[in-house]
Length: 325
Image (tube, rainbow, N blue to C red; front, top):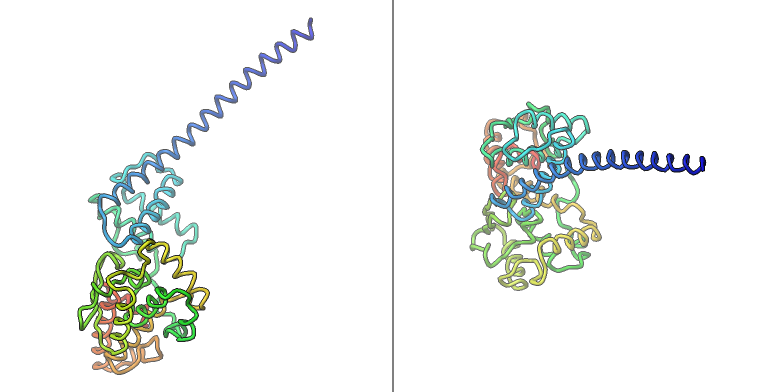
């Protein structure tokens, strides 16, 4: 009997403890769920912002959403909960920058995040909360050209090792006209070919900035004719597939063929155009540094850099240093 009573009291006490623990666990779980929901809500709001303000290519839109997802998650982790897009202020920017530095992110990664932050701020009418100069946030400038010596020319043996004909054409377009991968994959020769130049649609290009590239050599004209004969009015994406599928095939085939960094073909194009425009090699190709040039050579250098930057699709002249030194 006594044993039964003790057992009963223990049972009631255990039940009370269990209910208390369950309540605490529920409250903790609700707190976590509420915090996650707040972070998710900010990201959903930002996705709505992207959808209502379309700009740039599909790939650029995906990158923007991915960047904003990372930013919204870090803001939530840093204690900024319940934010909405128009809540963004200078303190949030500084907190993010401090977090990036503390976690040792590279300058390039931080610069990309700043691009997404500036887009967010500008889109909600609060562009002034993000300073224009990254250096003031302690983010170093991009390094100039790294003196690439390999991968600047499309080697015939490597091109022939690429399995897919569409990927081969995309690589040839990159080398001949200095196109980015996305531009070369989405390229429609029937739309782009204007006789003396190719005109790239804004939707193919980074940042939604269309541009034109001159046709100056017989090899360029011959390539365009071959692409036209193969693709007709279509792009270099299979009709039954989407861009992301062809990009995946591009990455696999180029890696297998020993061309893992086709972006260097743009470096090769830029350096060739510089020599054509000036008559001498750029610094990245073994030419003179700016401090060693004569006044006439400096004038030629600046003019060539402006042309190369424009043909490669860059709005800022200093980006040409990445290709030319």
